[in-house]
Length: 440
Figure 1 (cartoon, rainbow, N blue to C red):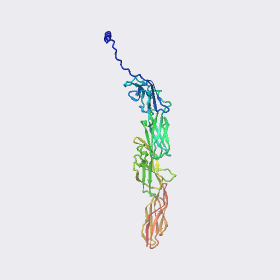
Figure 2 (figure 1 turned 45 degrees about the vertical axis):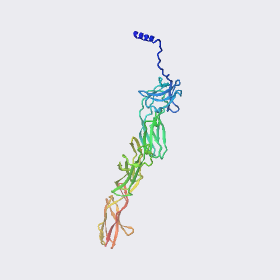
Figure 3 (figure 1 turned 135 degrees about the vertical axis):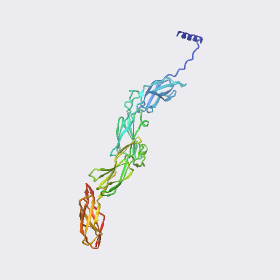
Figure 4 (figure 1 turned 90 degrees about the vertical axis):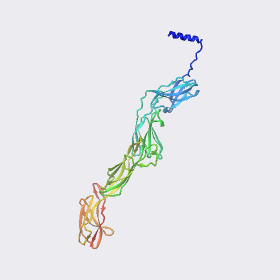
């Protein structure tokens, strides 16, 4: 160590006291860095500092690595920089640094702020959308967890919190825009009735995440369904009763576009159920007698008729996920269709088509339903059907014998069974087809 010192001293003497060049010194570091929210809304961060008029650069540094230059200030300009908080990385720990820069581009040491968090509002996700009978829509949602606050009481913490929940239904051709701002932590709301279909979106916001800068927006499409039913007015007992049905949902695949198109058609979609329901009258409850799934928008089917009833087609409320979007549609039913049921004759006629005066003629009647009633045997006088006698029916079958009269006549005859009830369902009075008897 002594030899080294001696050698250095000798070298200085040889230089004859010549002056060494000095290293260029950088600009002086800024001081007094302050950060805070611009009032009254906590959307922009005010960054201020003190210096001697140098140019400056403002940066954000993230804990765990990485920094971004936010902006610069020219020499002699204001020592304040404004930055929108939502443009910083969300859910990070960060701090602001400011350096001075001289004319050669040399930077000073930085002045830094305390560490602060940028914890954004928790993402909201719809969990349920329930159409209500009055046309309103009840929405429920849940929130994702947010990172723990590791910088409590930092300079950018807001008290009270600026968190809120924004539920928005964009304008449609038939309804204006609806926007509801709800307190933070709210997890349900009921939207008033408005023309369907329409989209609904939800986003939770705070000083770090708000407006269209939110990374996660949940959507619901509140659509509508259609139902139609065409049936004959009269059916024959025990035979097929055909009907034409319509069941579909208005297409709303993209809540922000298709929902707003009034020309959107109704379409058949997987999972749609169509329920054919029946009841004897308004005093009795509806019962489902046929369930039809995954049919075309318009489809045909049939049932068997065992008595007069009221019918309707009901399409239950629908809730489904389509392209990551929750879509719902309320239940819908057609108005009632009344279908009468008439008796069905399997036999109605005479054992003869031609008889002599006084000859015995036997009428045989067999009818469904197999009721125990008196059937009316009638003949046509040219204008009016006349009563000839009663055919007693037991379990739907009976006979009546009489002597032919009216020489030289050919008459039309028929059998009429009165109205009756079978298993609580009405059967209307029913006439058979006409049949002839000639008397010689």
